[in-house]
Amino acid sequence: MQTKIGIIGGSGLYEIDGLQDAEWIEIDSLWGAPSDAVLSGVLNGIPMVFLPRHGRGHVHSPTTVPYRANIDALKRIGVTDVISVSACGSFREEMAPGDFVIVDQFIDRTFAREKSFFGTGCVAHVSVAHPTCPRLSDVCETAAKDAGVTVHKGGTYLAMEGPQFSSQAESNLYRDVWNCDVIGMTNMPEAKLAREAELCYASVAMITDYDSWHPDHGAVDVSDVIKTLQDNGTKARDMVTRLPELLGSERDLCPHGCDRALEYAVMTAPEKRDTALVAKLDAVAGRVL
Ligand SMILES: CSC[C@H]1O[C@H](OP(=O)(O)O)[C@H](O)[C@@H]1O
Ligand SMILES: Nc1ncnc2[nH]cnc12
Image 1 (cartoon, rainbow, N blue to C red):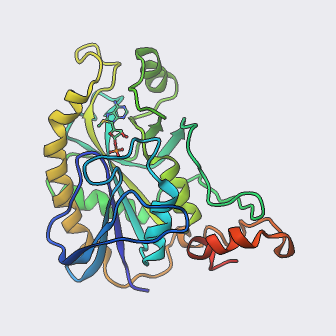
Image 2 (cartoon, rainbow, N blue to C red):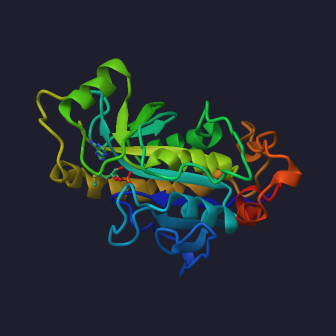
């Protein structure tokens, strides 16, 4: 199978460099309109698409990002590997602004978003015990290191609803009691939906601030985030240009089973399935329905 890379760019990453034959393509999704068109092209011989998570011009809030449409659109156009790049606050002194963290766990505290492609008439339960793909995460780690970034391998991402930042009490809870490493507002339900769509998913957290726990840094505000956003975006674009060579153009089955997540997940008896929902699931779950 041919690798096709999908980059979801968060705050500070609204474009990527070096795509050949690049064009913005509108993708129709049965799950509504994606955040924006996708920039589609070829990078170092491998097809790649880029989707700005908040849309060009930062139109969507973390709550209103159309997560299902985004993942469905990427699956629909043949993406095999999704790399999410996000601006995040840090709960660790050593994970400093400008560093990247390769996230491998999440605590999902979001509550105002649709979190599944499945539901009444087609129920499915996938495992998200290990929500990111280790193979793809390794590639991101190498690419970021090669781009000269200080990289921390592994970290727990607290996904909050937002759009307001956390209170100091919440920040302390997430850091001291829940042992989280970074905080952001967008990787959930994105990672869960990628798993439902049988896509390999890796998350690169670009640290912009110390949230609100750090005695020497005070409470985070958007100006803190913006200070490192531009530099982080430059590093992320460098990292992205290194991904194709590391991933390779031919792709075997994922050794961690991301691409087979639905194998035994669908519970609803075939004769009881809702035909309209099954039709909507053509790209995400057509393989097993
Ligand atoms: C601009 S600060 C808060 C905003 O930035 C992050 O966005 P993304 O995850 O898409 O990089 C964070 O999650 C918030 O949405
Ligand atoms: N401290 C923070 N909390 C939530 N999302 C963020 N994005 C960047 N910094 C953040």
